[in-house]
Image 1 (tube, rainbow, N blue to C red):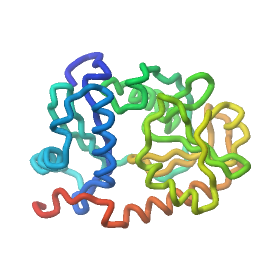
Image 2: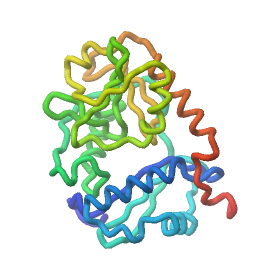
Image 3: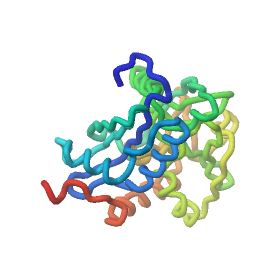
Image 4: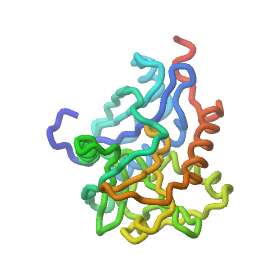
Length: 255
Protein backbone atom coordinates (compact mmCIF):
# COMPACT_ATOMS: atom_id res chain seq x y z
CA UNK A 1 0.00 0.00 0.00
CA UNK A 2 1.21 3.50 -0.76
CA UNK A 3 -0.43 5.06 2.30
CA UNK A 4 1.90 5.83 5.20
CA UNK A 5 -0.77 5.00 7.77
CA UNK A 6 -3.32 2.87 5.93
CA UNK A 7 -6.85 2.44 7.19
CA UNK A 8 -7.91 -1.05 8.28
CA UNK A 9 -10.46 -0.89 5.48
CA UNK A 10 -7.78 -0.14 2.88
CA UNK A 11 -7.21 -3.83 2.11
CA UNK A 12 -7.72 -7.44 3.10
CA UNK A 13 -5.11 -10.17 2.82
CA UNK A 14 -4.17 -13.74 3.60
CA UNK A 15 -0.82 -15.50 3.92
CA UNK A 16 -0.39 -19.18 3.07
CA UNK A 17 2.28 -21.76 2.38
CA UNK A 18 3.25 -22.44 -1.22
CA UNK A 19 5.37 -24.88 -3.16
CA UNK A 20 6.17 -24.46 -6.85
CA UNK A 21 5.73 -28.21 -7.25
CA UNK A 22 2.55 -28.73 -5.19
CA UNK A 23 0.88 -25.32 -5.25
CA UNK A 24 -1.01 -23.58 -2.42
CA UNK A 25 -1.62 -25.24 0.95
CA UNK A 26 -5.24 -25.14 2.21
CA UNK A 27 -6.10 -22.61 -0.48
CA UNK A 28 -9.88 -23.11 -0.21
CA UNK A 29 -9.81 -22.27 3.50
CA UNK A 30 -7.75 -19.14 2.91
CA UNK A 31 -10.06 -18.03 0.12
CA UNK A 32 -13.14 -18.51 2.30
CA UNK A 33 -11.64 -16.55 5.18
CA UNK A 34 -10.47 -13.77 2.85
CA UNK A 35 -14.00 -13.40 1.48
CA UNK A 36 -15.48 -13.33 4.99
CA UNK A 37 -13.01 -10.67 6.10
CA UNK A 38 -13.53 -8.60 2.95
CA UNK A 39 -17.26 -8.49 3.69
CA UNK A 40 -16.59 -7.25 7.24
CA UNK A 41 -14.20 -4.62 5.92
CA UNK A 42 -16.65 -3.53 3.18
CA UNK A 43 -14.13 -4.35 0.46
CA UNK A 44 -15.47 -5.31 -2.95
CA UNK A 45 -14.86 -9.04 -3.20
CA UNK A 46 -15.57 -9.42 -6.93
CA UNK A 47 -11.89 -10.17 -7.67
CA UNK A 48 -11.45 -12.49 -4.69
CA UNK A 49 -12.15 -15.79 -6.38
CA UNK A 50 -10.19 -18.82 -7.48
CA UNK A 51 -9.93 -17.85 -11.15
CA UNK A 52 -8.63 -14.34 -10.49
CA UNK A 53 -6.19 -15.34 -7.74
CA UNK A 54 -4.69 -18.31 -9.57
CA UNK A 55 -4.44 -16.26 -12.76
CA UNK A 56 -2.52 -13.57 -10.87
CA UNK A 57 -0.11 -16.13 -9.42
CA UNK A 58 0.56 -17.78 -12.77
CA UNK A 59 1.44 -14.39 -14.25
CA UNK A 60 3.71 -13.67 -11.26
CA UNK A 61 5.39 -16.98 -10.36
CA UNK A 62 7.72 -17.21 -7.34
CA UNK A 63 11.48 -17.13 -7.69
CA UNK A 64 11.93 -19.55 -4.78
CA UNK A 65 10.82 -23.18 -4.63
CA UNK A 66 8.71 -22.85 -1.47
CA UNK A 67 7.82 -20.41 1.25
CA UNK A 68 4.99 -18.03 2.10
CA UNK A 69 2.74 -16.10 -0.23
CA UNK A 70 0.72 -13.03 0.75
CA UNK A 71 -2.24 -12.17 -1.45
CA UNK A 72 -3.84 -8.78 -0.87
CA UNK A 73 -6.92 -7.07 -2.27
CA UNK A 74 -7.25 -3.31 -1.92
CA UNK A 75 -10.47 -1.37 -1.41
CA UNK A 76 -10.24 -0.55 -5.14
CA UNK A 77 -10.28 -4.34 -5.84
CA UNK A 78 -6.64 -4.33 -7.00
CA UNK A 79 -4.88 -7.63 -6.32
CA UNK A 80 -1.22 -7.96 -5.38
CA UNK A 81 1.06 -10.83 -4.44
CA UNK A 82 4.34 -11.09 -2.52
CA UNK A 83 6.52 -14.10 -1.79
CA UNK A 84 9.00 -14.67 1.00
CA UNK A 85 11.04 -17.63 2.25
CA UNK A 86 10.36 -19.46 5.48
CA UNK A 87 12.28 -18.44 8.58
CA UNK A 88 12.20 -20.61 11.71
CA UNK A 89 9.69 -23.44 11.89
CA UNK A 90 8.87 -26.19 14.39
CA UNK A 91 11.29 -24.97 17.06
CA UNK A 92 11.40 -24.18 20.77
CA UNK A 93 11.39 -20.41 21.14
CA UNK A 94 11.23 -17.48 23.56
CA UNK A 95 8.39 -14.96 23.45
CA UNK A 96 7.72 -11.51 24.85
CA UNK A 97 4.45 -9.68 25.41
CA UNK A 98 3.39 -6.40 23.82
CA UNK A 99 0.14 -4.41 24.03
CA UNK A 100 -2.41 -5.50 21.45
CA UNK A 101 -3.91 -2.94 19.08
CA UNK A 102 -7.64 -2.59 19.67
CA UNK A 103 -10.08 -2.26 16.78
CA UNK A 104 -13.82 -1.65 16.48
CA UNK A 105 -15.91 -4.85 16.46
CA UNK A 106 -16.29 -5.01 12.67
CA UNK A 107 -12.51 -4.70 12.21
CA UNK A 108 -11.34 -6.87 15.09
CA UNK A 109 -10.23 -10.36 14.14
CA UNK A 110 -9.78 -9.63 10.43
CA UNK A 111 -6.67 -9.63 8.25
CA UNK A 112 -6.91 -5.94 7.44
CA UNK A 113 -4.86 -3.16 5.88
CA UNK A 114 -3.47 -1.71 9.13
CA UNK A 115 -1.49 -4.83 9.94
CA UNK A 116 1.65 -2.80 10.61
CA UNK A 117 1.24 -3.07 14.38
CA UNK A 118 1.78 -6.82 14.16
CA UNK A 119 4.86 -6.40 11.98
CA UNK A 120 6.23 -3.84 14.43
CA UNK A 121 5.57 -6.23 17.32
CA UNK A 122 7.53 -8.98 15.59
CA UNK A 123 10.41 -6.62 14.85
CA UNK A 124 10.43 -5.46 18.47
CA UNK A 125 10.57 -9.05 19.71
CA UNK A 126 13.53 -9.80 17.45
CA UNK A 127 15.34 -6.66 18.64
CA UNK A 128 14.95 -7.96 22.19
CA UNK A 129 16.36 -11.36 21.24
CA UNK A 130 13.00 -13.13 21.26
CA UNK A 131 11.35 -15.05 18.43
CA UNK A 132 7.69 -14.13 18.93
CA UNK A 133 5.56 -11.27 20.19
CA UNK A 134 2.38 -12.20 22.05
CA UNK A 135 -0.32 -9.55 21.91
CA UNK A 136 -1.87 -8.77 25.31
CA UNK A 137 -5.09 -6.96 26.24
CA UNK A 138 -6.68 -6.79 29.70
CA UNK A 139 -3.90 -8.97 31.13
CA UNK A 140 -4.65 -11.81 28.70
CA UNK A 141 -2.89 -13.04 25.57
CA UNK A 142 -5.20 -12.48 22.62
CA UNK A 143 -2.99 -13.39 19.64
CA UNK A 144 0.53 -13.82 18.32
CA UNK A 145 2.26 -11.53 15.86
CA UNK A 146 1.85 -14.19 13.13
CA UNK A 147 0.32 -17.21 14.83
CA UNK A 148 -2.25 -18.52 17.31
CA UNK A 149 -1.16 -19.42 20.88
CA UNK A 150 -2.48 -22.62 22.51
CA UNK A 151 -2.13 -23.16 26.25
CA UNK A 152 -2.35 -26.67 27.76
CA UNK A 153 -3.41 -26.78 31.41
CA UNK A 154 -2.85 -29.51 34.00
CA UNK A 155 -6.30 -31.01 33.27
CA UNK A 156 -5.53 -31.68 29.61
CA UNK A 157 -7.51 -28.71 28.31
CA UNK A 158 -6.06 -26.76 25.38
CA UNK A 159 -7.09 -23.13 25.77
CA UNK A 160 -7.56 -20.81 22.79
CA UNK A 161 -8.28 -17.09 23.16
CA UNK A 162 -11.89 -16.06 22.68
CA UNK A 163 -11.01 -12.37 22.43
CA UNK A 164 -12.61 -10.41 19.60
CA UNK A 165 -9.16 -9.29 18.43
CA UNK A 166 -8.03 -12.90 17.89
CA UNK A 167 -7.80 -13.89 14.22
CA UNK A 168 -9.36 -17.25 13.33
CA UNK A 169 -6.56 -19.71 12.60
CA UNK A 170 -6.66 -21.90 9.51
CA UNK A 171 -3.74 -23.94 10.88
CA UNK A 172 -5.62 -24.60 14.13
CA UNK A 173 -8.65 -25.67 12.13
CA UNK A 174 -6.46 -28.24 10.35
CA UNK A 175 -5.17 -29.49 13.73
CA UNK A 176 -8.47 -29.43 15.63
CA UNK A 177 -9.64 -33.01 15.17
CA UNK A 178 -6.22 -34.55 15.80
CA UNK A 179 -5.85 -32.59 19.04
CA UNK A 180 -9.17 -34.02 20.22
CA UNK A 181 -8.26 -37.53 19.11
CA UNK A 182 -5.02 -37.28 21.11
CA UNK A 183 -7.11 -36.98 24.27
CA UNK A 184 -7.10 -33.23 24.78
CA UNK A 185 -10.12 -30.98 25.13
CA UNK A 186 -10.29 -27.58 23.41
CA UNK A 187 -11.77 -24.62 25.25
CA UNK A 188 -12.03 -20.96 24.28
CA UNK A 189 -11.45 -18.47 27.07
CA UNK A 190 -9.04 -15.95 28.60
CA UNK A 191 -5.35 -16.76 28.33
CA UNK A 192 -4.62 -14.84 31.53
CA UNK A 193 -1.56 -14.70 33.76
CA UNK A 194 -2.83 -17.36 36.14
CA UNK A 195 -3.45 -19.84 33.32
CA UNK A 196 -0.02 -19.20 31.81
CA UNK A 197 1.74 -19.49 35.17
CA UNK A 198 0.17 -22.91 35.82
CA UNK A 199 0.30 -24.29 32.29
CA UNK A 200 1.88 -27.61 31.36
CA UNK A 201 2.81 -26.51 27.85
CA UNK A 202 2.28 -23.57 25.52
CA UNK A 203 2.63 -23.71 21.74
CA UNK A 204 1.78 -21.43 18.84
CA UNK A 205 0.66 -22.52 15.37
CA UNK A 206 0.52 -20.71 12.06
CA UNK A 207 1.03 -20.97 8.31
CA UNK A 208 4.54 -19.56 8.39
CA UNK A 209 5.88 -21.06 11.60
CA UNK A 210 4.33 -24.51 11.65
CA UNK A 211 4.49 -25.08 15.42
CA UNK A 212 6.46 -23.15 18.02
CA UNK A 213 7.01 -24.56 21.50
CA UNK A 214 7.09 -21.51 23.75
CA UNK A 215 9.63 -22.10 26.53
CA UNK A 216 9.60 -18.63 28.07
CA UNK A 217 7.52 -15.46 28.10
CA UNK A 218 9.14 -12.17 29.13
CA UNK A 219 12.21 -14.14 30.25
CA UNK A 220 10.18 -16.32 32.64
CA UNK A 221 10.22 -20.10 32.00
CA UNK A 222 6.76 -21.61 31.47
CA UNK A 223 5.46 -25.18 31.37
CA UNK A 224 7.01 -28.36 32.69
CA UNK A 225 9.15 -29.17 29.62
CA UNK A 226 6.66 -31.73 28.30
CA UNK A 227 6.15 -31.81 24.53
CA UNK A 228 2.99 -33.86 24.11
CA UNK A 229 0.87 -31.11 22.54
CA UNK A 230 3.81 -29.88 20.46
CA UNK A 231 4.48 -33.39 19.17
CA UNK A 232 0.82 -33.93 18.21
CA UNK A 233 0.70 -30.63 16.33
CA UNK A 234 3.97 -31.22 14.44
CA UNK A 235 3.02 -34.79 13.49
CA UNK A 236 -0.46 -33.74 12.34
CA UNK A 237 0.83 -30.89 10.21
CA UNK A 238 3.37 -33.21 8.58
CA UNK A 239 0.49 -35.51 7.64
CA UNK A 240 -1.51 -32.57 6.31
CA UNK A 241 1.46 -31.36 4.23
CA UNK A 242 1.86 -34.84 2.75
CA UNK A 243 -1.81 -35.07 1.75
CA UNK A 244 -2.09 -34.02 -1.93
CA UNK A 245 -5.76 -33.14 -1.42
CA UNK A 246 -4.68 -30.17 0.71
CA UNK A 247 -2.80 -28.50 -2.17
CA UNK A 248 -4.16 -26.42 -5.05
CA UNK A 249 -1.99 -26.81 -8.14
CA UNK A 250 -0.80 -23.53 -9.65
CA UNK A 251 2.53 -23.60 -11.45
CA UNK A 252 3.53 -27.23 -12.00
CA UNK A 253 2.26 -27.30 -15.59
CA UNK A 254 4.32 -24.23 -16.53
CA UNK A 255 7.52 -24.96 -14.61
